[in-house]
Length: 213
Image (cartoon, rainbow, N blue to C red; front, top):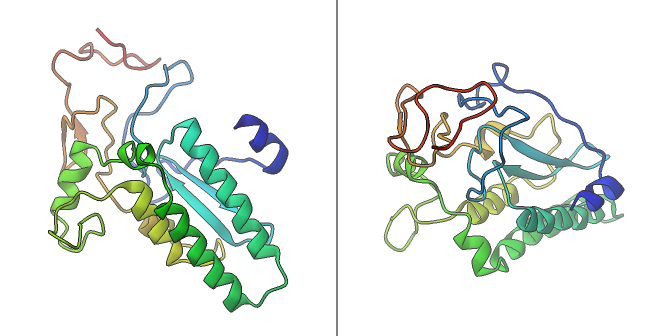
């Protein structure tokens, strides 16, 4: 994956903490913190990985954290979408192909990708409070859809939007603004204030990262 990023992408970053209204309110992630496995899309308000064409059009927006395997597949899709954007076809044709590319990619996700992209408990609780949540299944209304599917559907609704027009806040609008790194939802969902998970972490926050007991 690093080779693909090095060879085919120009990478940059911007700190959105305290700048953008959609930015999460979680603890920071110090450089010395150990990377922990989590579900794809967890912490969607904390980090957003945008793939932007040289034309200024947004090809993809990956919200939250993603496993290397899943992220590699999404990077490959980004390159396919780049070819569409840079083609000589009409804008209408490009947008149709863009829409289909996102929806078909989601439809072909392996079961492992879907299973690994579930909403975390505290994020699911927030979505259950949203009557119009697109994480609800149409069959029974249960909040059981996964981030990987909803993400591609939201992108398909924004075909080749310029970065100026692209509404990141709406794309990453799911779950709580406070992301609990302990993974058990131990926080005040209304105020975004963390509480200590029982038996999982030390009571004192270490500036170099949370320490497991």
